[in-house]
Image 1 (tube, rainbow, N blue to C red):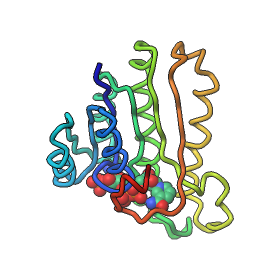
Image 2 (image 1 turned 120 degrees about the vertical axis):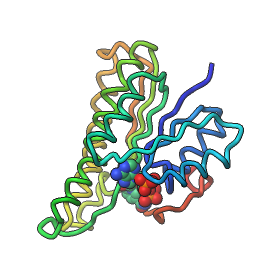
Image 3 (image 1 turned 180 degrees about the vertical axis):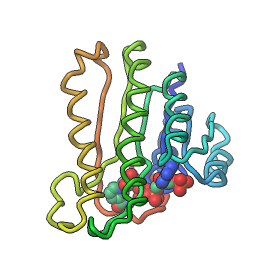
Image 4 (image 1 turned 60 degrees about the vertical axis):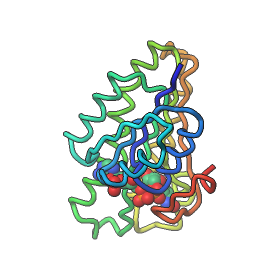
Amino acid sequence: MSKLALITGASSGIGWAFAERLAADGYDLVIVGRRQERLEEFAVSHPKTTVRTVVADLSTPEGIGSVAEICATEPVTLLVNNAGVAHYMPLAELPADKATELVNVKVLAPTMLSRAVVPGMQERGEGTIINVAGMIAFGGLPRTPRCPAAPSTAGVWRTSSRCPRLSARNWRAPESRFRSCARAWWPPSSTSAKAWT
Ligand SMILES: NC(=O)c1ccc[n+]([C@@H]2O[C@H](COP(=O)([O-])OP(=O)(O)OC[C@H]3O[C@@H](n4cnc5c(N)ncnc54)[C@H](OP(=O)(O)O)[C@@H]3O)[C@@H](O)[C@H]2O)c1
């Protein structure tokens, strides 16, 4: 039976590397981002993989809603909440629109996609959600004492990923897994699956 993975922010960097790795592992893919040409480039360069490209802006309710709809209706076995923006700046200097974008992409979108995908995983009795957090959520906080917004969004996923795992029995899907992951600094937009692996 084919496995279906949905990866947000797959048009570059870590998301692209996730997509490459999962394609190699035999997954069918739904890849999400705003840059259609990059998503198409991935699909064209992986002709043996079934790839559906979805152009969506996860900072907007419409974009989140369109991807959540896919999560709710397709048999997604693996959801990778990876899309992110890095607005590292002192809180008082963080423009309101950037603060909104940060929270929408890093917190609201993963929340809405996860709540949409979980019922199907419960029904099928298995599923995995990977939330790409960041080293900063695992104890790096003192390095950015004046820039709390971005680390906070990563911290949400460190905590959130622990909760459903601990109560997996209550979810009636004992094979469901929730992971938050972190890594040390990674040059944004690098696309080395080997390095990520
Ligand atoms: N690089 C690091 O050292 C590091 C450290 C800590 C945490 N992280 C986290 O790791 C994840 C991946 O980072 P990366 O280094 O691979 O960054 P990246 O190369 O800049 O990739 C970010 C991805 O997110 C997508 N994205 C951004 N805003 C979006 C939006 N509004 N709607 C839909 N997609 C959006 C981008 O696609 P489009 O531009 O096509 O929309 C892109 O594919 C992020 O969540 C980041 O916070 C990275």
